[in-house]
Amino acid sequence: MTYYINKTEARAMARADLTIYDEVNALMRQVIQDAGNGLYETTVSDGTTMTESTPEIAVTGTIANPTIVGTPTLVLAGSTITLGTSGTNLNSVIADINDANVNGIVATKNSSNQLVLTYSVPAALSWSFVVGNGTANASLGLSAGTTTATNPESVSYYSVWQGVTNDRPKTDQMNQVILYFQNLGYTIDRLINTNTNKTFKWVISY
Image (cartoon, rainbow, N blue to C red):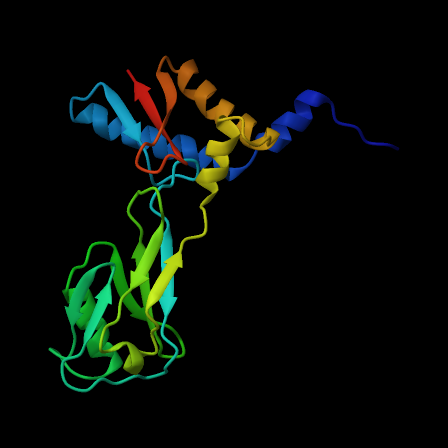
């Protein structure tokens, strides 16, 4: 026996994914929080699949179990960090970097005991992480230079919304988010995130 599904069933199956569910729930969570604070409008410009505007960039040192001598420096995203204040091994280096509280930068290590620097890039026209010429670079296996973030999926949603590319599933997903809130009586719009000019933000009024 041949099995068929009709158009309505096919669309229902296509929409049974986590993208719409996650997007709607993230937006509704923010609406509830904002409404509880006496606001009448919610703007979400980051933190969801369709709006992400602060991608992460990871840079890994090439030396396992590195040690430093004295108080060398790292220059990360334009900020100079002095190392050696808490010790000379990798754990101490990690502690010194994190204690410096450079916005968006978190230091960890991987299973090979190499330094890993993760940078949450601010919403900007260009997403990049610059490692400068610090005196600790060689000891930690870091090279001075610029690492550019891979575009998050939100850039693709923006391109589809703007009509630059054609992607029916993404179009349908965005439409379903809009329909969900409209059915609940909200006004929901997409506006260009002017911090990036390549992602959008949701604006929900109530």
